[in-house]
Image (cartoon, rainbow, N blue to C red):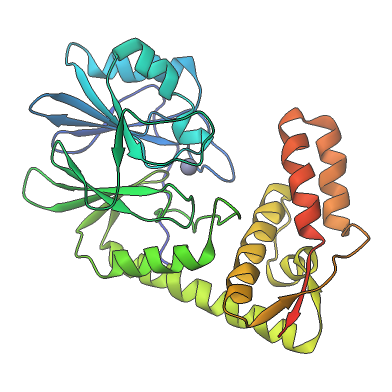
Length: 311
Ligand SMILES: [Zn+2]
């Protein structure tokens, strides 16, 4: 696939990406976040608009405020409520007082945006494009660039460096397909994603992402035509991942595909496996040593044992 790569960008710096738009890459690199979450600062007549505050990190908030310098922050836009985009929001909002605009109703407990956006809503020149799939509350934001080019802040729906995880129930594979098709029906010139560098000619990669999922779905059905599979077994069979984080992500994607196929009556769910898959035993062992893994793994284990067969 036509993914882009980039060297680790300078930290704690506002990088010029387009006229009137800078990018600050948060210091949260990882197998799911690449070099870190992108926070964009966009100059408008009323001041600066922040697109995605980033992870909970006081230094990152300080970097945003420093980059704003003496320009007021007049609005915070949020693509979705995952922690690596939302985490810095309370700190940033407390520091600058700007209202936050995001999709509503949000599935995130206790979060109600000041300005509730739905598909097609406009604010300060940005147009919200409802794109659920990676997250149930995901918005992309369309904006005319300084030279009239059509920009789309694409969040984690379409990223330049990798495909996105679709993890049920917040993630929904049927929605993800439809949201990719929605972007294919548009004529944006460049995407500014939640992770990774800017993506020119974005329809090419978007189309490849959709084909990639359709192929994955076909190979999943081909495996199920031969025998029944657990989520963990199918993920190990279809994805050659070594890293435990990536194995876990693969299991979430496989479950999302299976639930989509179940909705379409192509597969049916059986009673779950009683035994853990070796991959999940390894995840459980890692969780013993990691607070952040413990809660996550507990939820993964049950889903990993779920079994499916062709209808
Ligand atoms: Zn993200």
